[in-house]
Length: 127
Image (tube, rainbow, N blue to C red):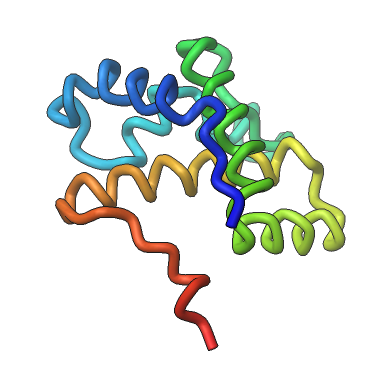
C-alpha cells in the first residue's frame, strides 16, 4: 500500500510547537479556530446574512501546511478521498470540502494524543 510522507513531519512539528506539546488548547476546535480554518457567520444585524467566512487573522504558514496535509491525505486515505468526491458531486465548493478535511485532520490528531494510542486506519478492517 502506498504511504504518503510528503509534508507529514513538518506539519506534525508545527502542530506540536503551536500547541506547546498539546498543553495550550483544551480541544481541537479551539486549535482549529486559532489556525484560521473555522468558518464564522458573516452578518449585519439580524436580517442581513451572507455566507460564512474564515477569519483573516491567523497563522498563514500553519493554515497552508494544513491545506497541503489535507490534499495529501485525500490522495492517501481512501475514506477521505471518497468523502471529498461525494461532497463535490453534491455541489459543494472544493475549498469548502478541503476546509472540512483540514478540520477532520486536526480532530484526528487531538483524538490520538488524548487517547494516547497510535492511529488505526479503520478502512483496513471494514467488511
